[in-house]
Image 1 (tube, rainbow, N blue to C red):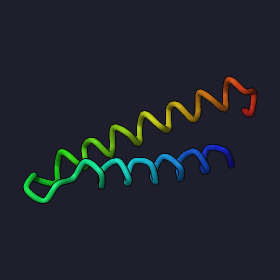
Image 2 (spheres, helix red, strand yellow; image 1 turned 60 degrees about the vertical axis):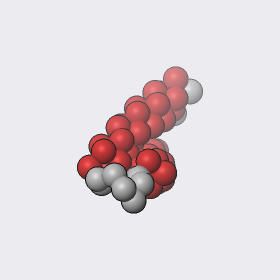
Image 3 (cartoon, rainbow, N blue to C red; image 1 turned 90 degrees about the horizontal axis):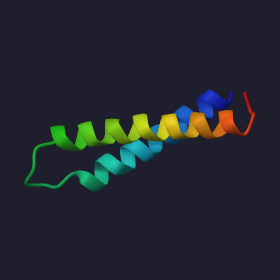
Image 4 (tube, one colour; image 1 turned 45 degrees about the vertical axis):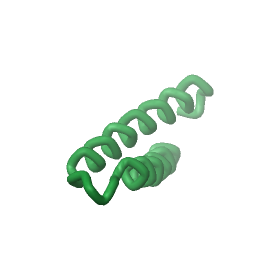
Amino acid sequence: MLVTICALVSVIVGILAGLLKYTQSAPKAPAVLFGGGVFGGSMTLLLLLFTALGAF
């Protein structure tokens, strides 16, 4: 259950980061890669946080 919540929050954060990174004059690929990196980082951070708190 917690992994699903972490994944959903990470997806939302990654999408928002990609949208904030994207500009009209630039190609979309760097924004997508940036959003994917933010997704991976936030997923790792949330899982480590819940593991440190003893939720798993």
